[in-house]
Amino acid sequence: MKKIFIPGLALAMLWACESKKNYQTEADTFISDYSKKYQQLYTVSSEAEWASNTRIVAGDSTNALRTRQANETMAAFTGSAENIKKTQALLEHKESLTTLQVKQLESILYRAANNPQTVTEVVKKRIQAETEQTEKMYGFDYKLNGKSVSTNQIDSILKAENDVTKRLMAWESSKEVGKVLKGGLVNLRQLRNETVKALGYDDYFSYQASEYGMKRAEMMELMRRINQELMPLYRELHTYARYELAKKYGQQQVPDMLPAHWLPNRWGQDWSSMVEVKGLDLDEVLRQKGAVWQVQQAERFYQSLGMPPLPKSFYEKSSLYPLPPAANYKKNNHASAWHMDLEQDVRSLMSVEPNAEWYETTHHELGHIYYYLAYTNPEVPILLRGGANRAYHEAMGSLMGLAATQKPFLAQLGLIDRNTPTDEVQTLLKEALNYVVFIPFASGVMSEFENDLYANNLAPADFNKRWWELAKQYQGIIPPTNRGSEYADATSKTHINDDPAQYYDYALSYVILFQLHDHIAKNILKQDPHATNYYGNKEVGKFLTSIMQPGASADWRKMLKEKTGEDLSARAMVAYFEPLLNYLKTQNKGRKYTM
Ligand SMILES: [Zn+2]
Image (spheres, rainbow, N blue to C red):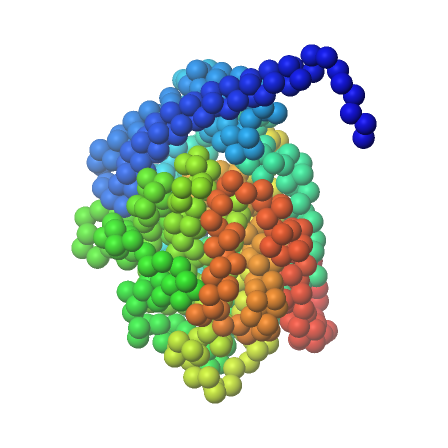
């Protein structure tokens, strides 16, 4: 191209350059001040939340009060009108800022939307309502035959009991909590919606989806697509389960839809305990190894890939095992991983018992912990210390959970004998009853319900009706008895109360997990995806670390494409279970399909 001299242009360019620099300096100062304060408040808030979740004393509201105050202070800061104004002003000069600065400023606005100062009263009420809901949920006294039971005990009944009447009682007991939580959810729906509307989001669901750079409708479309991709396989599993369970419980009639209390999980989201793979009785081996071994083993697995040992404080400060029966307080039994200070203080809250389910959960939670540690580095600013998106964070641990249950790995660990013949189809079936069965629940029932709840103003009188309509449509599951509108069975699911409108994260995480696993097996290990052994492979560790290290400073779409060569799709998941489809079709020959 020919150069044309335009008088004054050079000067103008110089000016532009100068002001560009000015905006960048201004942004730097603002972001750095904000981050310092944010990190400090975040730590205080985490400590308070930690106490609230690990030490629940009936009638004592000290922890709840402390949590509420910490969260209110945090909310006042992140939602301050001054911060919002400053951020918006800087974002008006996006083109003069670096990509990393823009990302950080956008994350400041995203945080602000949850607590904008313009609606202080609403935010205050919401935080109070959230704390109360959590306390009610975890403090709930589940009763069976007039005696208190833990949810772990209910789960055990649903997994092992063959007497349908006893199953029904356990299942019904698990749903009683809904009556106590329903009012709180109605209130929270309104408060959550009102909060984010102040910064221009249509509703809370839209707000949550925006973290992926997606509109609500796009997210729902994606959910429905994933469901469809897996439906042919789910239909076979559904038919298989109806007939097998009817046989197991000695029922003459095979029902068209699965009664909820027949399934080995309170929400029918995981049926894997239906199948026992011969030669692969993990529960029994793990019982002998013990809960402590399980946690240490999970750490060894990550370390074998070249990842660092966990900080000493992890073991000192985490709450990893069930409370002794004599304890005069309760704790939250739902597994979680915490990044307390956005630096090295990482903890996990679990109730690890020596069995296959907790074995996998332990690997999952450590996945979060290693993700935290990986992006805690000088390259990643405080505000971007998060997953590439929320689903990546979930995918990492689930991936390791899957890898940790494959036969060559288990054999190397000595948990099974390498020469024990195992039934590959049964193994695959067991996996499908976990991973595939989860999809209609997560991307269907949960996502559609919360979409209706937050965006479509679902009437409280219809909460239960809608919940069961969706369960029938997506999972082919019906309630065992008539569940009137006094119940709110959806609220028995923790996330409905305290992780609102983001359950699709888990569906996406499974999809991503199979994409990553497929790539690792075929391109790094050169092994069959059904029989891998990640143990000790530093290349695999490098691959995973390269995904985790940039945290949220990376673009999740580009990352997936770059790392796996693919866009987001259930292709790898469908391919993984392909061999099972034919097996199930043979098993189901002559059986009636009802989905
Ligand atoms: Zn998780």
